[in-house]
Image (cartoon, rainbow over all chains, first blue to last red):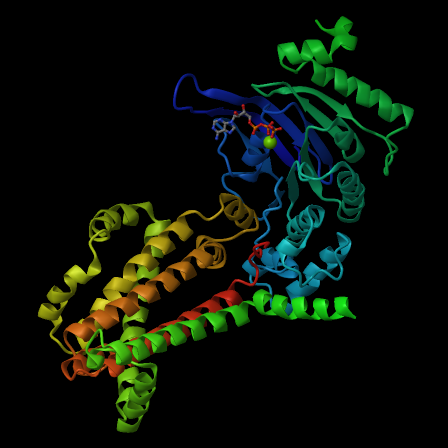
Length: 267
Length: 272
Ligand SMILES: Nc1ncnc2c1ncn2[C@@H]1O[C@H](COP(=O)(O)OP(=O)(O)OP(=O)(O)O)[C@@H](O)[C@H]1O
Ligand SMILES: [Mg+2]
């Protein structure tokens, strides 16, 4: 049995008019402790829905999620979440944001500030402890959000396109940073993205989803050593393979135009 | 040389125009000057009874008379006591009810219809009733002020509490917040800017209510002094009373703003 398990998860959304939307179907995934899994798929395929169910923000219509054998029914501090938008508390300084979890648990101030400082240093924000969120760049805010989740020492870390709002350069830097952080903490991570390259740079396994209703289409092991070289032949081969898989999931017209070169592979 | 002086001159003229404080001071001096001109014109032409026309010098004299007679200090104390007590009472009830209604749907459904019905009625319409119920003494003034201050605080509190960013709630939940912690450390903090806006508006309304109660039924206070001065044709005293009310309102308003700036340091500044 896995450390984080999703078994037969399905989610349908009621809509005001017409048929309910089936967002996710038959989603079954088992993650080992300390494993980094990337969830890859086209926009609207239900990646966020899966992550929100694991976080406990949404209730699955069928199936269930287990963390260390415990069924998930509500959000809880065993599952840290990093959102696409940073979701920092704007009325708290950086260090207060980072130590909010321990504060909720009643950890004495001195002690929790020490805990927080460790993670502020780890995400490279030493010297910014007393800044307000409004004084930080987008990338820095996201670092704070990661530090906040880590300081709470969750069993698993769920990240929903945490670098989606960053420019390419910042994004690349944060990816390298996250590899280091993960190496230092060995957290069990589920990382949602629609960037193939990002998934391959970060994950032990890449789970690719189909277009809506989202199901698991393929699972790839990435056994390359970190830090990964995105020009290495094995990396490039995997990248092309995943690109072809995703191509099949693009809507009809878009797929025909964009997928002209891989026409032969389409069923 | 010539260009040098020109630069200096334009620099000086520019400074007066540019400094907001200089412009404000100039504007006030202008108002005083126009007032004094009207007084002089009246002395020369006599277009109205000079007894009815307050003068700047007369207002200053009125101020010193009121200080000398020791009534100013008592009036200010009475008015402050009423407005502060009334405001605090109304604001406290409004914040408590606003928070409850903003977080519990059931409470909102019960509180909202009667309050929405009362809200469009100009509150002064209720003043005679308050005097009937609570007499002409202090209670009617304080309760009425509280009643008037209540609405803006309530409406803003409820809005602020209801529209807390759901993303922040989720973040707090997955950090392990209990519902009590969620309210205290997230909802209330997120609603604070809007609650303070409500308090500021509520204080303005409370002040209006105070003056109304003092004008109608009272035997002390700044509003009462204006009515009394009217009976004795002391127009200078009447103007001074109005100015004092303005001054106190401005002072307390500034205090609230200073508190706001301090409490909401975290808020993004407006880019000008
Ligand atoms: N609250 C909701 N009510 C109705 N439909 C919803 C709701 N939330 C999501 N959906 C639908 O479920 C599907 C999956 O949404 P989801 O947000 O999980 O996609 P995603 O894979 O995260 O997409 P993206 O990459 O654009 O973030 C979408 O088609 C969306 O329209
Ligand atoms: Mg999403």
